[in-house]
Image (cartoon, rainbow, N blue to C red; front, side, top):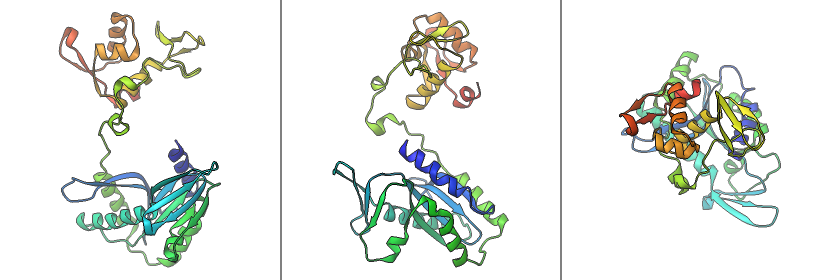
Length: 290
């Protein structure tokens, strides 16, 4: 959530960039021609004269960047410290990988700059390096537009036409590969670790049940239309996009098998198998359109 809020804060200033600037977010691009490895870019700004790779960090406290040791040290208010991988080196690696990506996809070469953008306005920033390039690599999110104005003066010659720039952006979007790996193993969790049931958007309890055409919360008595649908989407994103009636009955805490089957049928979900061995396809596009 902190990272998401940081991206929103930075986006406010990114939205003020010149209209010809194309901005792509959360790219995941193959790092080789075989597509066996990938690298990710938080924010990529494309202009006719240069490209800018930005890594947005919304971290509070005293931040000490140490590129020499490839680490970022965060000191909290209580005096405790945390160590993170150095984002300065990280964003430079991303820039080199992007250059390689341009080469093996036969895209016109663009000068590529990189920045670490600190999105927390209260963070204290220190860079322990004698190299001025390391100091210049870290800015606050409020300085995005002014820094890009500096780059515009530095890269006055347009390398690409607007049409070529749009073709580059289209190619990057085409080779963008969303990470479809299951999310629970990343955090070493099992489906049994999740809270089950349908959550009430008002009181946040899981005491909501199917009642007629909608859903009723037994705790705060709020009625909702799409609470169960949101729980289905959670199941698809967190566990699996395929599920048996038994899986869904346990996850949604349905007491009535017939009520569950009737509701699933009303959603128009596709399924495989017959009778008790039905496996439903939880198509996100379909669920999100309801």
